[in-house]
Length: 172
Figure 1 (cartoon, rainbow, N blue to C red):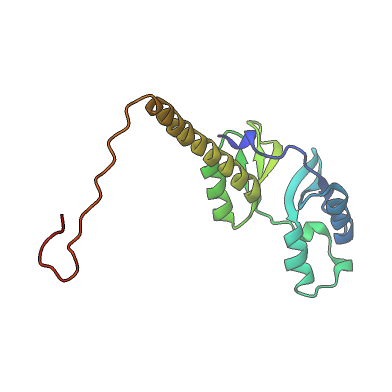
Figure 2: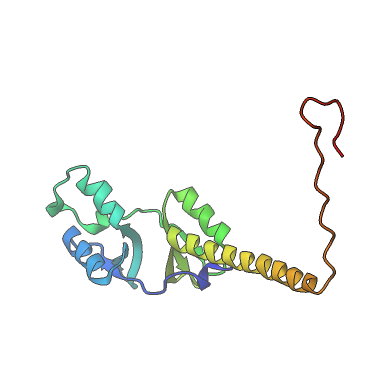
C-alpha cells in the first residue's frame, strides 16, 4: 500500500507571518491538527514547514511564552519531513522516526506537496490490512468447517479409567 493512497489530500495552509491565534483559529475552523506553513518567495508561495496543535501547546503554552510576538513561521521546523506518494508505509514510518515527528508531507514526482500523512493514518491503514488478513483466515476456517459437515465424524474417545482409591490396580 503506498502513501499516496492513504494520505489526506485536504490541506490547510497558513502564511508564516500569521499569528499563533490566527493559526489556532484555522485549525479549529477546519478541524485539523496541522497546517502547512508557506512563505512568499520570488517564484510565489512555497512550503516552509508544518505546524501542529502539539507545537502550539508544547512549544508555546507549556513554556509560558508570550504569544503576541510569535509568528507561526517561528514554530515551523526548518527541516521539512516528506515522503513521495509512491513510498510504502514502512518508508513513511522511517521518515517519521528519523525526524521525530508524527506527520509528514507527501510529494509528487515534481516535489509538489500533494498531501499529508499522520501516524493515525498509518495506524488506520495497518488496522484495515490486519482486518483483511483476519477475514482471509476466517474464510479458510469456514470453508474447512463446511467441507467437514458431510464427512463422517471421528469416533468419540473412550472415557479414561482411573485407579480406585486405596487399590493398587485399575478398576474395570
